[in-house]
Image 1 (cartoon, rainbow, N blue to C red):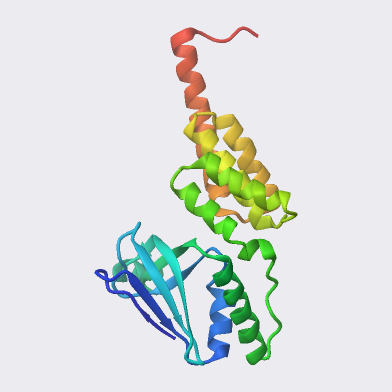
Image 2: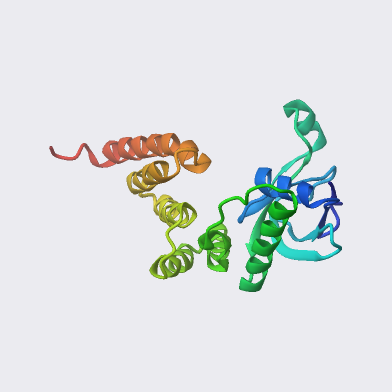
Length: 224
């Protein structure tokens, strides 16, 4: 598989020589929310770009994405990894979601491997819309999208984690650190390996303790 992304271009082309290669990519790197694209010159974080999958049968799939993290060649050498960029899908229409699902099933079939479990939640465009709204701090709109999903009977781990993440980030933005901690703890119950929850709980504990100390310094200790 070859993928290159010049810093000045808003495109990432990922060519697959075989369906087995595409199946490996989906299972190990790609998912419904984003992927890692190897590139010698990744563009800056925040860059919007089109992600082109060039498939073995000559067909293409184009998705919209945004660069959310980068690994330059020096960092990659130090970490023993490939240089490139993490790309988060910012929008996926219902038609594109169905096409991606079809391609996933075909890739697994052509490579003689069992298909990975894919829920309708993971392919529902509302989940991707919620992620995009969350990154722009539009918490209420993001929460409404996820609640629509759950009212329709979608209840995957992805949907539950997205709802709790929206609530946790909104609480953090309102300096309600204790509520944010509670929401991140709930995420840990649903998804124990969640990186954001793991990383922010201790930080929020420190922020809550600092806020309490500052309040007591100014207003005195609260009566017991």
